[in-house]
Amino acid sequence: EPLLKTKRFGRHYHFYASLPSTNRTAKELARQGAPEGTVVLAEEQTEGRGRLGRGWYSPPGLGIYFTMILRPTVPLGLAPQVTLLTSVAVCKALETVAGVQPQIKWPNDVLLNGKKFCGTLTELNAEMEAVNYLVVGTGINVNQSAGDFPDAVAAVATSVHATTGEKVDRARLLAAVLYFFEADYDYWLASGFDRLRAEWLERAAGMGTTVRVIAGQQEWVGKAEDIDSDGALLVRDSGGKLRRLISGEVSLRPE
Ligand code: ATP
Image (cartoon, rainbow, N blue to C red; front, side, top):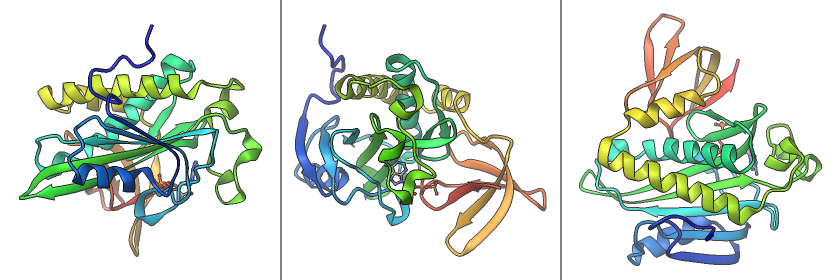
């Protein structure tokens, strides 16, 4: 039985032993016309990035670092939903391949036992208020042991192996992520975000809890209540007002 069960995703496939950043290479390929579903995969990233210019630690041999090129014909405002779809696909893949149930921390982190093992960085190229292309880059800590993380991330990071004690075949896990992503993405294009919002909420971490919202220089504390029909996070502030947070602009900390 073939590992890759997708129709489009991963059928155009660029593998590199080492890249500065899979998103950066994917943007170049997208500019050159690479089709939707193109996957850029690197064994290591030397300048892997998270949101807000943060680094993503990407050592060789242990993780999965890949970027998908998407060309959805949707308005700009819907683009952040793709990050949520990716997190759901990673959860489904882990549930199937490793028998664990990860949780999602809005907007882009996937957690095991409250620690981050996966992050997604979605970057947008737009023309005339519509999406031209998106690159969706995801890093997954797969076979790291707890002691493999550098001090800078050891407090927040985990891996599948550190959680289950099992080693996971990375090709199999990536094939599963692409399979679940393709199915949910095609559903999303045809039918919108509703069902996927429910699937996201089933796996959400921190709903109903008090969070510190960090938006640039501004910080405030509120209660995370829900995500909106479009994927924005709804947080009730101390004055009782429900505020909408758009991903890309803010970070959350448990309070
Ligand atoms: P948060 O939402 O927690 O503020 P973020 O979503 O903005 O973080 P990301 O862009 O997902 O952050 O990831 C970058 C951060 O993740 C880094 O600042 C670092 O703390 C942490 N990190 C870096 N590399 C890894 C890794 N391999 N595994 C887990 N966490 C990592």
